[in-house]
Image (tube, rainbow over all chains, first blue to last red; front, side, top):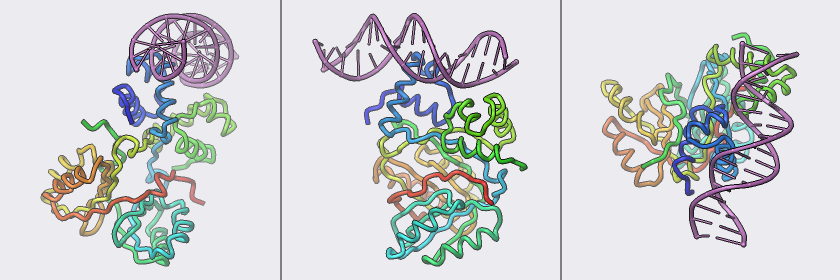
Length: 147
Length: 147
DNA sequence: TATGAAAATTACATGTC
DNA sequence: GACATGTAATTTTCATA
């Protein structure tokens, strides 16, 4: 997609700290603030930067249970599954993948009881396998330039 | 953790757009800019907000292959596994979970060849199961107040 | 609320094809 | 000469004591 060194630096800086000011970004990449601003604007426009989000500690927000639920969903039920399950607030991420167990859901909830009823709802669409998350040593590594 | 309505609103706003200015945040929650700033500062200080990051499109950055690799790692090899595998730039996330297949790795790479050699490296620590990601209909839902 | 800093906007310069 | 991309200068908005 034809990015130069400065674009990659900006991407890395913004993946590490999305609230960094344009002035500071400019300073770090040795560019004036307007030039840095324009670079970032173009990265957004091209769809390379898709958004900016605060990361929060789910545990501190009263949701200590994290789980990965894998589900086998029959293709006929796919639409309803997407409409109902994927819309639930406990579903933080959902990947449609190859193989027999075709959905991977990342779940966050307040108690094992809540997880239980959630899994039961998912099971109306097919078999599930649930794994509780002990820890996530790598949380969200940024995409870096691959040499 | 004793958050009020305004704190939750700020969390939702910042999870949706981490670059929103304090003035704008204040406007949205009917607070002065300094008051909003102080609220956010406290959320950071309390560890509720852990950071801010730009989201990027891996595909547009030349990494069209996303995969979930599940690995069975013998506990004796755990330390070396953490040191070597979890440090790789292709590993975007890693969860240590309950059950036999004790690691879930989210992989992003440029080609199936790259994925292959990565999986081979992981297999030195134990058996793996790899699923290619077709799509991720839910990418990173924010944590919202649960009623 | 007041001050300095940063963002947005405008105009202008430079380099590349 | 036209376009992309940068700096400089100015005004408005924002951050922060």
